[in-house]
Image 1 (cartoon, rainbow, N blue to C red):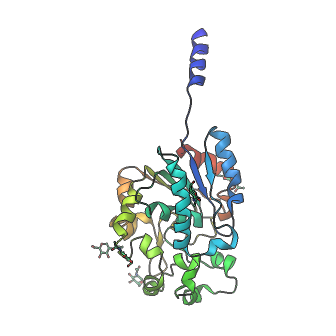
Image 2 (image 1 turned 30 degrees about the vertical axis):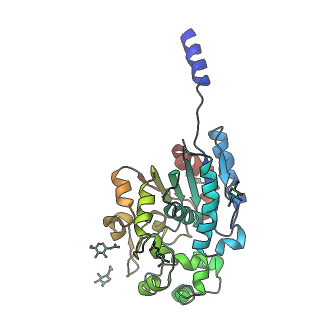
Image 3 (image 1 turned 90 degrees about the horizontal axis):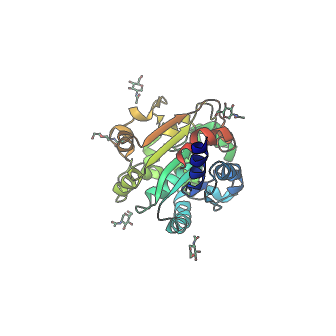
Length: 283
Ligand SMILES: *[C@@H]1O[C@H](CO)[C@@H](O)[C@H](O)[C@H]1NC(C)=O
Ligand SMILES: *[C@@H]1O[C@H](CO)[C@@H](O)[C@H](O)[C@H]1NC(C)=O
Ligand SMILES: *[C@@H]1O[C@H](CO)[C@@H](O)[C@H](O)[C@H]1NC(C)=O
Ligand SMILES: *[C@@H]1O[C@H](CO)[C@@H](O)[C@H](O)[C@H]1NC(C)=O
Ligand SMILES: *[C@@H]1O[C@H](CO)[C@@H](O)[C@H](O)[C@H]1NC(C)=O
């Protein structure tokens, strides 16, 4: 008994030090949408410093992806300069794609673990998603708008990936084919190196998402040219190790988590998602 008390006292005096966490919200919402998550992290991991990015909330979330990457990167650099020990990063929805690009665009990033909460990592092609933002647009012809100079001013145009118009996607999209190294550029090596620098990449998504289409895009799966979904490990992107996902996997640094029954607008509000699939990686 005495020993137990001593042990307990000893334990309490041992300070648990959690790494700071950066949160990045989704499209057409802002930092307020991530407050539940922030509070939960602070409650379950007392003492964690949580930064909830407040840039590009509301309509401004539709601005060009590269512009957002550039602007938010400055904030992230400011944050990480205060934490040389490194930070963790959780991005939700469009924010999950933005956050992933931010770390790829910054070869000296101090991000240790990156958690992507249902982000369109391999692109997006679906009516439900489209109609949230562009109610009048038909799926089959949306490419005509998005694969144009005007369309590329919107974030959605930047990661619209129409599997039936791959050549136009590659010609017009200024963003996704580059960050996924589908088009090689003088940044391709850096994009891969910066991603493989991570300690851990966690890709969370699920079949009842209803917005990310195909939902497997949250784990870098995507449609082939016939509209059949190809899982990450069967894609050339993985097999060629185009952006380092295979390297991460072989080093046990890539985790794919599939959770059924979760609607897209619940990932960041359902605290059991936070408790079961996010908090375990935020130590
Ligand atoms: C970064 O930090 C500097 C110095 O504290 C500050 O002047 C600047 O506004 C910050 N930039 C951003 C984007 O937060
Ligand atoms: C990389 O490519 C971009 C766009 O083509 C160009 O503007 C830039 O100067 C190039 N940078 C280097 C270091 O070659
Ligand atoms: C598309 O379908 C055709 C006919 O069924 C098939 O021969 C071809 O291999 C398919 N292409 C892909 C990329 O799956
Ligand atoms: C994968 O590698 C093969 C063989 O080198 C090449 O033909 C193909 O274009 C590559 N695909 C991607 C997505 O990099
Ligand atoms: C919350 O997530 C759990 C799985 O972690 C699921 O069983 C439950 O149905 C979800 N609740 C809602 C309201 O989505």
